[in-house]
Structures are given as structure tokens and as C-alpha cells.
Image (cartoon, rainbow, N blue to C red; front, side, top):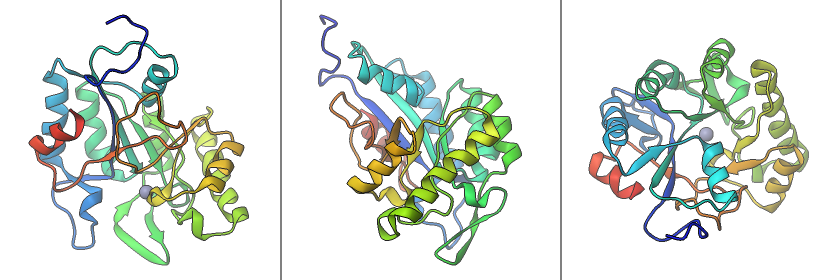
Length: 242
Ligand SMILES: [Zn+2]
């Protein structure tokens, strides 16, 4: 390895996308947005015991692809959309026990309450409170914005999209007292105009739901991520990151 080229086909950077973690999903839970506690534990334990993988922050992964450093192993980034309370109650204690880090994207219009999306109350989706976010922020968890109300940004006016994007950034910056650099498109939906607004709002990167590895060809405003779902056991999890 000559250290000039960042990527050969041998090593990968996988940015993983989780939502809720729990013992069992409710009837209304979207199973693509749910990971069982036992499976999550198995996945984290696998990553901690494997010499082939290292869990790094999103910022470190972006640094790796931006500076064309030579990568000599597989990297995994943990991200959690919506900022569910189950992150605070279940995922964070596990992540912490393994010494990992994560980026969380809360829906800031519903802090401390159940999410209401398109007039429907999501009883199973309670978003973390300001106090929880502040506490996690002080303990090394990274946060990114995910709008106020989780609307499909391509289906609302540009001015409303701007309002949703900018204010979710401000909300988190007020709570955490630091600049928020990352954005997650609700439902993974965006277009060129939405990317422009996200850049205009001052974000440095944005994560999508496009399933691929992160490479130095990836756009920083369309960072690919791989869903980890209710249907994943340890074998399929390993398939997704190898
Ligand atoms: Zn979401």
C-alpha cells in the first residue's frame, strides 16, 4: 500500500442508519425503522471484538475521505434518525459501554413529546427532551438537524423548507451551545434545491438514505447510509458492512 490512494476495494466505510431500538416493536412501528435491543447489542459486541472494524465518528469518516488518507481497515459510523427516547434509554448506554460514538438527528419540533407527522400522532415515537440532548451532548454524542416536523421537503414550498431546515439547526445550537454541521433529510427525500437550502443554512454535510459505502467519490451532501432494521440478524448485519 503506497498511502496515496484512499480507497482500494478491500476496505470500506459504512455509515449505518438506526431509528428506534427496543425489545419488541408496536403494531404501528415501521419495521425498517426498528432494531431489537438484543440484535443491537450483538452488533455492537461484534464491532468491539472484531479487529477488522473500527467505529468512528461521522466527522472522522468525512476527514478520512476528504484528506485522501490511506485506510487500512473497515470503518463503521453509527447514526440515529429522529432522536427517539430509546436512544437515550437503550442505545446510548450500550454505545458508551463499548466506547463508541454516534451522531443523532432529533426532530426538534417534538422534543420531549410524541412525534406528530402529517397530523398522525406516533405514540411509539417519543423524541428526546432538551435536557436529554444537552446531557448526551456533554458526554460526547454528536447531533445533527432533521427539521422541525419531519415533512417531505420536496413537497413543501421552498420558504417552508428553509424555515424547517434553518430552525432545526438553531434549536440544537441553542441547546448545545455549538455549531451544528450535519443535516439528515427526513424520509431520505431531497432534490438539488433542497441541497442548496441545506448548504445556504450553513451545514457542512448531509446524510441520505441512499444505500452505499462512503468513498472519496461520495458527495458530502448526499452521504450514503445503510439501514439496519428489524429483519437484520448478525449475519446480515455483517454482510452490510463487509
Ligand atoms: Zn426521520
